[in-house]
Image (cartoon, rainbow, N blue to C red; front, side, top):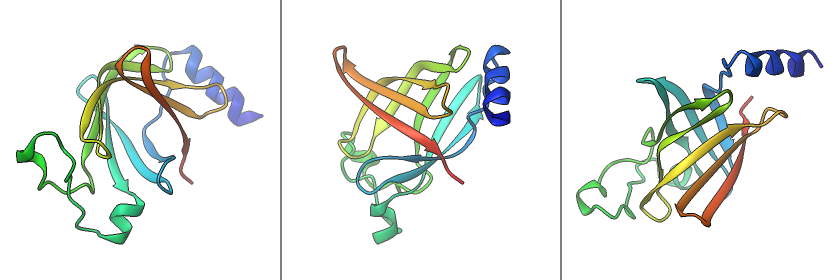
Length: 134
């Protein structure tokens, strides 16, 4: 109850803090880190089942062949700016599973979960729901 009230107060003030570690679904789940950068947020890959199996995992599916040798661990995969209280977008989201970069919008839900929606072109979109890591 107290956490919900604190979250609601932060949203009302437009100061929703989503920095920190989040669990993303898919392929057994990944952990990502959101942190402030420039005037917005940047997201970095912390770990995934692929990285756990091979800590030296590279960005082999990148559409730019020159980028395929970069490590997935700590790779910046997202850069967005605030669109309003609890909403970020007007940037890009990179998907290392297919090597593409997409437009994305991230929304902090009232239940404290994050929804990330990435689109090639609407209506061709995919949404993930992230939960805060403990």
